[in-house]
Image (cartoon, rainbow, N blue to C red; front, side):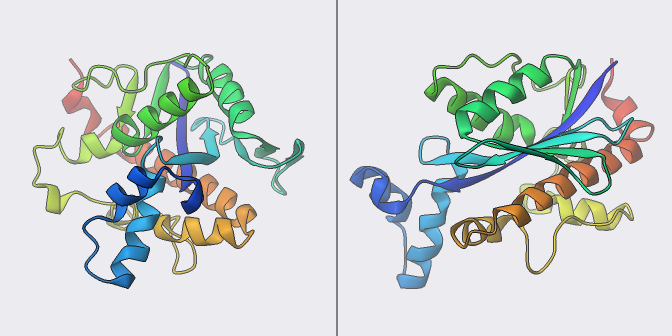
Length: 229
């Protein structure tokens, strides 16, 4: 079956554009100023206080993929290695094109996509009056259409939450080059975005789908068969 790996990067809306009650909710438990600044970034974790700035998808068989990233004007280019197409556009446009591209596949692979990426993409689409082409958060206990590798590695949450692996940890454990670095990781995306380093975020998202695809290949014949009926 045709399989695709996907991942997204998100940021919070500008602080002063958030509703006062949303701002209060995000920071109400802050213990000091440093904690307050950290909690402000939490807006990136919700489709009600944040937006999608990068979407990446990749065919794990061909190694070819596509990355959409936020841009004021549309632009298109190929990666230097020729494997990825990069498209700059607005959030609504990237969501339209993502769902159209996704509809051509039968199996979707992610890392925590059932709980985060799928709902975030779907709610942001609805906010733009768009209908998602697929339900990426369907029946949890199935790997027939959506294979969430975090669910596989935690055995559907059976493992104690403090032992859940990050994508970085899983890559290290399976001998896969990690997409994370000291300069670019999940918590650094917001700062990179505000500093105008969106190209770095787009590359980081590409590395995420490549690492997720490599992890999928390692689990496809080892752990995944345990979850299939």
